[in-house]
Structures are given as structure tokens and as C-alpha cells.
Image 1 (cartoon, rainbow, N blue to C red):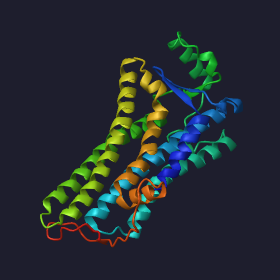
Image 2: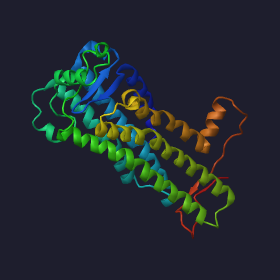
Image 3: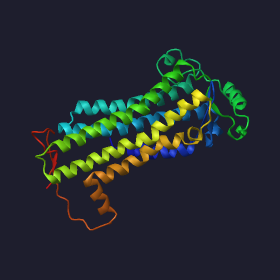
Image 4: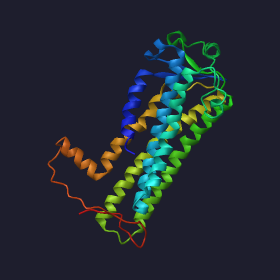
Length: 303
């Protein structure tokens, strides 16, 4: 689950190399590249944009899975291997399919009959139409500095509609589900009167970490989805969607590892000892994980 840290670094480096601006139109969606991918042509730029979305999807699912994993670990005590494998698969398979598809597309660009029925980003690419519509709808923009820019020429297509629907559902569902699970954890902890004060304090600290992880999608994913829907319905240009889309998608993956390092006590003490922020004694921890219920209140006992 903590492979999210590696995705964070990967996303940050990829963002710098394929930096782009998203510019919604009435019937199309332009992607204005700023990085050196323009030197390789529009096809590579658009493929890089899909790669970015695939990795971002992986990061978002990874963060949500860490919340689900911790909830199950606190509630049931131990998570089976099959369940862990399923959670990891649901995190990495969608983005892997997207990335593999990109390499496949670059090799057989004209043979997409079967793939177009499976993946959301497989509609035909008509960059000339995107450019002409963007110049017409944004006459005050100096778009020449982004040439040759790319984008989706028909946002009413089944593929783009499906992709947008999935992203919007994810933007609202991830914070809602994460918030519900976090509240359940805190509720179970508070209801266990027989839990020792030390154990309850440690359990609540972990629950507060879950709450912080839940707050990240709320402030990053929901505004992007809401602003996009508003922009498409009213044709009003919003700078947040144009310039901050990539940043807001990456931000949770950048902050999430630090939240884990702070709220998980062994990690925090190890980091403090590593950077010699304070003198630490050898850490001897005996951890007993048991099922969380009103009759068996102990989650983690540390000595």
C-alpha cells in the first residue's frame, strides 16, 4: 500500500515533463502542453496525457485502499491475503491497462475496433478540429505558444462521457466512503469502555490520520469535478480547472505519505531517530491485534 510514495515521485517528475493546461470548450476539450513532449509531436503529447491520468488514477485508488485496509485491520484484526491481493489488483490493474493500451495504440493506430469497446480513451483523435474550435471559442487566448496542442474533439462521445462519469463518481464517492469508514472507526473506539487509555489514545491517533487522508480528496478532487461540471453547463471559463487540474490531482499523493509517517507512531519515531531530532531509546514494541468489538475492546496493545 505504501507504494503510493513511489507513485508520488513518479507523478511529480512526469508532471514537470508533460505539464499541460486543460481548456474546456463547448463541444471539445483541449489539452495545452507546456513541456518538451511537444518536440515529439501531438500523438506523444496526448499519449503522455493519458499516461498521467492512468498514474493519477492509480494513486487515488491507492490512497483510498490504504484507508480501507486500515479500517479492516482495526476492525477485524487481520486481513486475509486474498483480500489484500484483491485490493492491490483493483488499485493497479485499471492504470496498467491504460498504460499498456497507449503503447499498443502507438503501434497500431488504425486498428482500434475491439479496443474502443473496452477503454474510455479510445475514440478517434481529431486534433485539427480541436484546434479550430479552441481558437474560435477562446479568441483572447494566445494559443500559438502551445502549438501543436491536442485534445478530445467530441466530449459527447460515449468514451469521453463514460470517462468523465467515472472520474466524477470517483471524486465524490472516494471522500464519502472514506469519511464513513473513518467515522465508523472513531465510533467503535469511543464505544469500547473497557479499552485502556493508552490503547484508546493510540487508536484515536491512527483514526485522526484516516480523517486527514479523507480530507485530502475533499479539498482536491471535489472542487475539480464540481468546477468542470459547472464550466460545461454554463460555458464559463474557470482558471482553477485550466491551470490547477494536474496540481490538485498530484497533491494527495504528495501529502499522504507524510500523514502516514506522522500518525503511525513507529514510523514517526524511526524518522525522528533517523534525522536525530531527538534522542530515542531502543524501541521495543509488542503488538497484539485483536478483533474490535464492545466485548473485546483492545485494538493495539503496546508495551
